[in-house]
Image 1 (cartoon, rainbow, N blue to C red):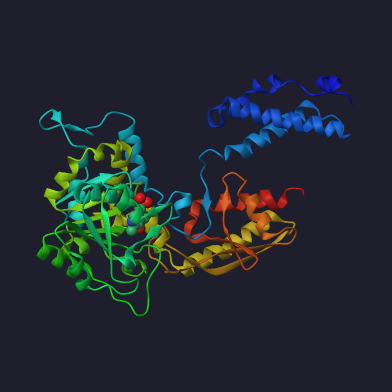
Image 2: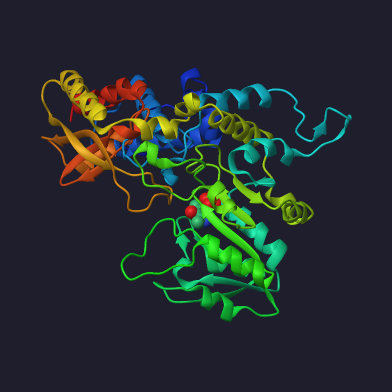
Length: 465
Ligand SMILES: *Cc1c(COP(=O)(O)O)cnc(C)c1O
């Protein structure tokens, strides 16, 4: 068919741009994004006609446009069902927030707050003070400072105290964690000079003592978050390092990363050093993330000596690293939940850690039945399975949390194909492939998401192929 007559059978773009269902996507995809989707469907239709297909009617073109827009919406930020079993999944946004934290954001974010206003004296106040008392109660820290994330916290400490000076670190702790955080690079960026001591597996207090000199600013420890050196190893613990730092009059700083505020053993996870323990051991400053084992919003927290925190507050770099009111509101609300042990499970991280593998297995068994019923006729085998979940986010390395989930063996497509289709439904479901099966680990799926999960499988497996 010559192009001229194509004009007559394929409607113009503007026929679709004014459609209310289509223009509803302007907010998520932008006008240009919506237009590009329409254009793409129309272009495809034109080539199909040239290839001999019958001309589609406007209704079917509209349906295709809407389907493409819905698929494209996932390029914006959307809610995802996390079936990976990795609780603090950095790619999926790390720690889900507690209801109390979300309420605080909406309550305090909707209006004005005393973020930097001292209500007592009617003068300018300090945003960093809003959570100071909570952190003091939980960690025993004299003072604290909240910045954008733990990487920023480390940068601020090094920039304030070690610019142009030496920082001594054990070779076993020169870590790289996900997302491009390499300790040696951050050190260099801050203008500090890295002095590596010891070997990968063994470092002694004497190594630190020998590396000490007139230009040494601090001894630093970094939590090897996502790996563990095992076997013939030796490390200088915080207590010995802090004592040596005191003797030689340098600072003792710890990048703790995961930032556990309580003993995780009551949740069946191995003990991680807590912030309070590290400070009690004598570390002058401890830095950690707000959205790892604390279970709050993304931020970095520095706890420790009041005189040092005061010095960091005067560093102009702080201005570039400061957090907004929503973060401070969410952090305060999350920390408040720690004060009442009965409320701790309101933090999603702790709710997820507290479920037993047996409870999850029972839920998986029930869910398999309902999904199978919803997907009839049978196009996949669903089995409740025991799995291994993980804390993730570079915390609790190598620790498997016994868990359970559903294993899916599709009969008419590959597990990878099924996984890809599930990522395209609304809300998208992300699982993992294990031994030729798609596994959805239930430890990271909230109970109230089971219905979404069932709908997602029904949608994908019952769709005509
Ligand atoms: C996770 C981690 C960081 C980085 O924390 P962010 O909050 O992601 O910036 C730094 N150091 C250690 C030891 C970590 O585990």
